[in-house]
Length: 317
Image 1 (spheres, helix red, strand yellow):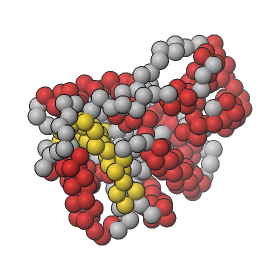
Image 2 (cartoon, helix red, strand yellow):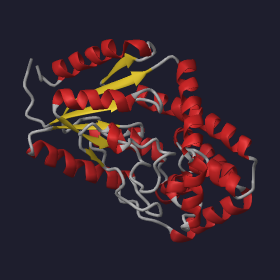
Image 3 (cartoon, one colour):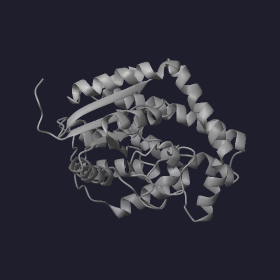
């Protein structure tokens, strides 16, 4: 096996509720790793239940990064995530440990793995205002349809309620004539790291059942109260954080727009769809070693398989 001079980077991806958290802790202990959250919503403080944020007691002494670093009204971006990760990877290596990205936000994780270059397109404030006004009058679904007409892959990736990012994709096309999806596809898939990516997958119906059970647990843990507290602190629907799964649906209930039962049903539906989009994104990434987690009773077997993949790929025997 040839030795790489590139810094080593371990990555664990997969859809929501597939079991990344438990697996990541065991792997981090085995390989002396520090975990970097690859989740675009866990950066926000006061957003714990809806983001399924790992609890301090679950960390088992493993350092976790990029969790609780911003207030919920902060517009966190993929470019900032990438810059944060570059710095952290360097810092973790300098301390003799293995950097380990764990998460399900596909674009964020892939941008770090392959050093995506984000063009400085700039902004057109008048165009943005027109699009926000359009969404206010006609609804986010109609705005999303505009994106689907010009850039179907970006529309598939972005939820209609993610109004800011939908507008950004429209703005990029408006200013450059290039689709955001084409810009992403044109990125050179050459990694600056000695990279090992493991993907967790699962029987689709079992995954959906786990998603629904997790949402029931979130409701019991106080998701409604968490969202109400955010709204009380002035975190409005225009904030990126409030477009996250769980927050937009429950906020809709709290504003009196739908009954609670409908909000929860929509949350389960939206999360199932999100998991499907996650799997679709990761299946288009190269270099992923897929491991099926359907047999949940045999965690130790899955762990041993993943441990061996990592040891072989990163020469960590």
